[in-house]
Image (cartoon, rainbow, N blue to C red; front, side, top):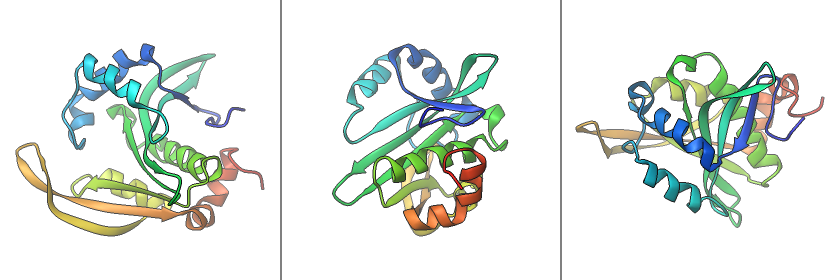
Length: 188
């Protein structure tokens, strides 16, 4: 088994060949309703992929089925800070797969990767306050609210609050140990 893989999901580093499908995802109205930035063009996508490296990583989320991989989303680690051992994370997932456990499984894979392989001590995210599904996901994996930024982002014609969440390495493994074992990400 590869490092970023479970029975049903494979996370692969983004390649230029993925950009068309990722752009379609960026333009899906059900996906972008909680994104903190506007959909991009192909030129923006190409510039973004070239910017990946030391301080940010991006992986496509792929369903493994019938010896093929179907791209269903994107997960990123951003603001990777090796000195302070922290990084932020974000996920975009096809709207028809939201609420089916794929987001939680993806979060477990990428956060385990950040803690175990990148030696991070903290993972954090910021979420639009009205994005209840993302808040439920972060609650489920044990992240806690660390702050609330009032009227912090102008989104879809109005100012919105951002919820700041975070989880420490030991908290993550204490909360998710059994699920990580079940997914084959750690041993018993």
